[in-house]
Amino acid sequence: MEHLINGAKALLGLELTRDQIAAFQTYTDELRAWNARFNLTAITDDADIQVKHFLDSLSLLPLLRPGAPGRLIDVGAGAGFPGLPLKIMRPELAVTLVEATGKKAKFCEAVAARLGLTGVTVVNARAEDVGQDPAHRERYDWAVARAVAALPVLAEYLLPLVKIGGQAVAQKGANAPHEAQAAAAAVSLLGGGPAQLRPVALPGVAEARYVVVYPKLATTPRAYPRRVGVPAKSPLK
Ligand code: SAM
Image (cartoon, rainbow, N blue to C red; front, side, top):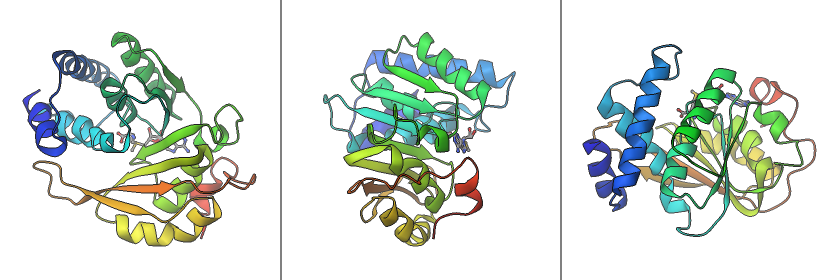
């Protein structure tokens, strides 16, 4: 776990505890075991898992108030990123993972159980349906996503889930400034405020990375998110 340990120190000024390191090791073991049967992730090298999955997920930590309980939803969590690493570091958070693919949702449930995490809910559904469900709509302090869709689409998945005063947060690559520009009108329609782009420099990763943060300023109109598939097919302009 040296890449994660050193990276957390360099990037976040964070000293991982023995228990946290053990949790990330168990997570790695599960990822490898499941990946041998299903294709969960293309990233299989040890150092890459530590940096590109775990450390990259933890780059959202500075946004989460330490020690304060809150509700976070990860949309399109895949094998649990960034939601589960964040839960390992901030057990006081209630974390919901939304994932459309059944086997990935099952993996997230299995890892959460294996790690003994309480306060993790896995929802095997589409973001468009979850965003119209009163149990989830405007109920979260943070709605986060990594590698799910371009920002104009992602805004329609994330902002309906965020309560006023909360934040929608997207982890993005070098194209983030351009995508943020393309999403500005959609974000405003959905109740979001101006984007804040925070650069993230992962050790040994050349590509520029950004965390894009939108404050939720106003209620999202009822019509959004639109039906399953519509946001991706006809992104808001
Ligand atoms: N966030 C994870 C990560 O960074 O490793 C997974 C990224 S993967 C490229 C995108 C995931 O989003 C897939 O597992 C896919 O099933 C899920 N997904 C895409 N659109 C979705 C939607 N509308 N609702 C729920 N899940 C969705």
